[in-house]
Image (cartoon, rainbow, N blue to C red; front, side, top):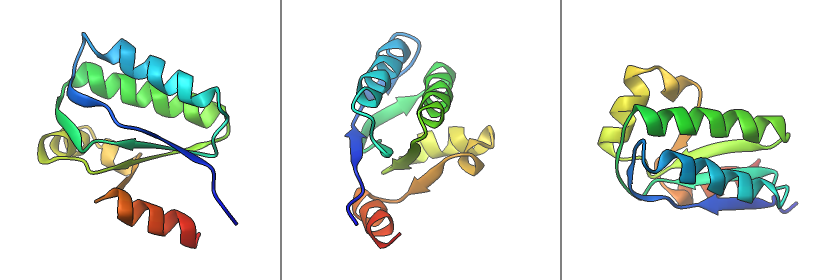
Length: 107
């Protein structure tokens, strides 16, 4: 059974100036009605509390559409932010996109 998923790859710094664009991208992805939304952080160098807020709001939006949200390729700084706020317990985080895809395909 194929799982329909959409991937969003933000890049650079996710802060107050870019958090609105981040949320807009997730809303655009949700228009395609995916079952799974993947946010691949491989090109993100830094995320602050505004970015974290956008991520949490994105999770709420994805869940409201009946889809699942997964994170992958999270760097040390972003992971530290997630751990300090206990958000690493809320999000399903994979080390790489390959690991995530294996997990989704085997489910």
